[in-house]
Length: 579
Image (tube, rainbow, N blue to C red; front, side, top):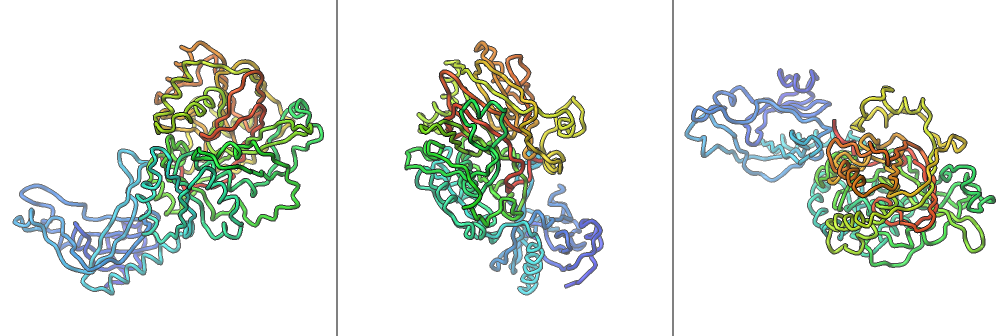
């Protein structure tokens, strides 16, 4: 074993002096010099193995002579049983077909491999090293493990909810696919397979702060709606904030002069069992909610906890949140983001439904959404699709077609808080009007420290009339049906939502709008009947026949509501889609 040196190895490690080097065999490559430094591992084929090793029957074959893996891309290392290590291209032409192999002790380095054709897509990669000396293999495992232990953001203990009926009913199968990744990475997991509607919500809400603090995060193996259930269970008794700002006449029109919107809140959900596999109607807010006075909540759990994160292993019908946070709708990719400890801040929408009780009191009901809140077309589709759950994800296409043919509009009044000109300039990246700044890894807009405050005394923009749909996109909401999302340049953590109002129009024009949504590089907002407002808060009042609100794919009945964006309220096990 050599303690230093390495020559060309240092170049692969950015010029760093290796802390450890020795000769080992790399499966399907040959004998290499393996080196370790503060950044990762690198190897280089020995000169004796390099001689003619690439030539076989006149063809140049085999892997490159050198390689490297950074620790940020390694998620596990393990010592395995003694076995065969293969040489890829032996120098003897007679062995080109038969190959050459050695019996020796081995260890595996588990890392990620990024797709060249689809950069967001990650897969697992195994590098099998061998040596005839067992102690050498153990030494390498110990040193690599010690280096990985310095990656402080990686989770050690996770609470995992599996929705068995998500998407095509493959929630359990999806978890079985990714579970070995967590096992290899030595991540302890407590797995709960949900048995009824609201099960995950109940567990999250009833888990004590002390117990929750034992975990580094919570994962949802399911779709956007299932994640919404877990999110609301987490926030229902732990998040304290003012209600969304409203125009001066909003609460007065409800008869709420004696109600203070500045009081912090505690959302109290009570519900009964329901046949739907996600949050039942009573959880959706039919029960009462009282304002929180700040005297009875002694929560020790901080949502700003730098260690705690939420995550999704996609198994749903749309999986828009995963696509926007990782760039790929792939369980393996999401699992690797988790075990590597990736982090990105995520804005959350706070949606408050207002109503008058029989005692003439204003009563709010609070829900949270991570991706989208929609009314009209969006609410009708989710309501219609509930009748066809047996169809799986195809039910959305069928329900969408039926709702589109009805072409129903709803009368409503919407007000949104105007964004000041200087704020628009900051949020546009460079202040230019042309071009769209798309949210990517290490997004400068999301990472800006500019304070975001909702000032209800600001200017409120109002729109009243008949609308085919009202949509509030908190993130871009990319999915297979809308490759650019509802709003291509919506960001994960900029503190804004995008309010999209589709006014009543002929069916043919609305079809053109939907076709633009389904088109890569389309312009769905470039129509006269479409209003688009970038805002931090809005209010909504319906009159006459009403639709239902769709929050992250879950129903939320409300005739009057207010909403605001809570910037970076939670952190996700993700890094954002790559450039």
